[in-house]
Image (cartoon, rainbow, N blue to C red; front, side, top):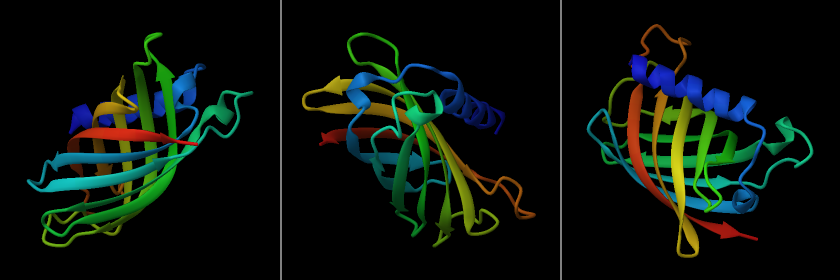
Length: 164
């Protein structure tokens, strides 16, 4: 659990403290992820990462992001928030952090305490063909809104394509 709290802190730092945005990620992207949850389910996760709000200020470089996931035990999540990508190399390698509040449906999965969940993630991406391949981790929890707050973690691989 401490590791994923650290991931949350890094994701937040990525969103707020890094001044450079990867130029190749200044377009909208549709992202398809397949991953495994710490509860034992397999998950399909679809996201849309929008263009940065502005290129003139640090906060303007934040990108709106929306997502929907479903898992094999009937769990589902939908939400939206902000992402921030920054380059690690001139070849297009980047790190992206995101924070998204949303709603969770338990299905036959783990009881996470209630329907309101916060999803924070960190992913490493590399250009591949006409898209981008990423590997990432994320954590969902209710941030203490409910008495029960076990959270769930996911490890995923993604492929995204740029949209004009």
